Image (cartoon, rainbow, N blue to C red):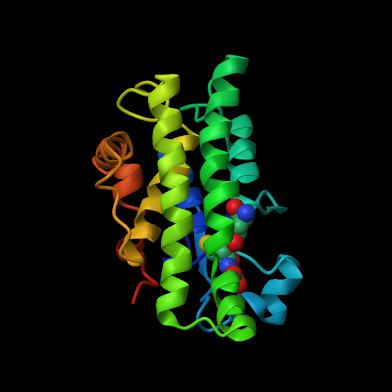
Length: 214
Ligand SMILES: N[C@@H](CCC(=O)N[C@@H](CS)C(=O)NCC(=O)O)C(=O)O
């Protein structure tokens, strides 16, 4: 097969690409890379992705890293169904929602950050969870307010069409749930999440459906 996705079931950035590929109906060969087993630091994987992070997409022999950039690549290469609106203001909005999650929330709570807090600053389980909850709460609160203010949402983050914004949102909600952070206080986010999860592209790619799940 020409297309390979290096993924881990619990990796929310891998989940983004699983959704995007499924939504566009693009088949791929999954390659499972275990984060707890540190397989992302193994020489074979580092040779493919020197940044040593998941996911990695190989499409037609070219490699793509950074999930949001990769979603944009997929959307430009395989335009239908589209994940990013054509109108430039709407594009900016969809990218803004995506980046609230991808740039302001996810990086602060990534595995290596939580590990560093424990190893270098002596954070115990309680402190690590408090750190996680703080940034998730701040992120979802800001996102909820932005969605409410801009009023561009509908069934999904942007009107009634699935976009990259929804693809970033849903895995972040899954991630938060693992750390006991619910979205009950954010009615717009909660509603969008529920509607996304009615769609096959989201439901069939969620972490517990993946062959590498444990
Ligand atoms: N901004 C990157 C983030 C990639 C990333 O941090 N991936 C996580 C999994 S969700 C990872 O590989 N973590 C390994 C680690 O922290 O050591 C993207 O969107 O692709």
